[in-house]
Length: 153
Image (cartoon, rainbow, N blue to C red; front, side, top):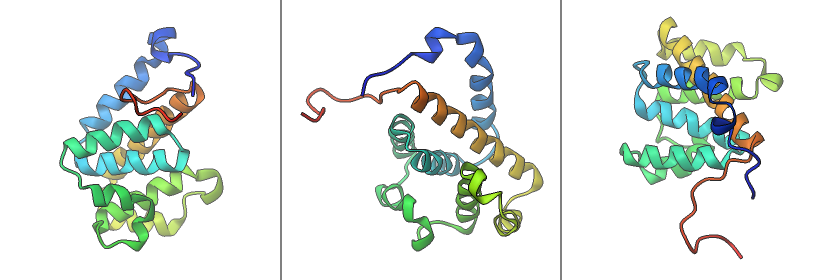
């Protein structure tokens, strides 16, 4: 894969609001582990290798287990995720695929069981942010770091 463009280098002022949104999400008070799971799940759905690599590394550094990262794509079939995490992951899927799902009432009701109204807004802004980052990375073909010798022939 060859990068198309470095968006931050090409238009730093245009990306400033994205960086501010990211800082707001990071400092929202939502659990860091939940933030990284949401970022990973949206990036899985969107197929963003750059973001998957980044957030898997960040999650591991913060103590996330390999098993939970490997099973995230099948979270509905695993007992490793809490009710709060499940509600957040369902909401992540619903909003990432909003053209197909139209944010179902059932997902919203489950979200309300585990999140305050303020937290629901913060979670939704997190989902908005990662979907935006995914579109920037995929659209401009951002390439994740690759260790020397790891590139496939």
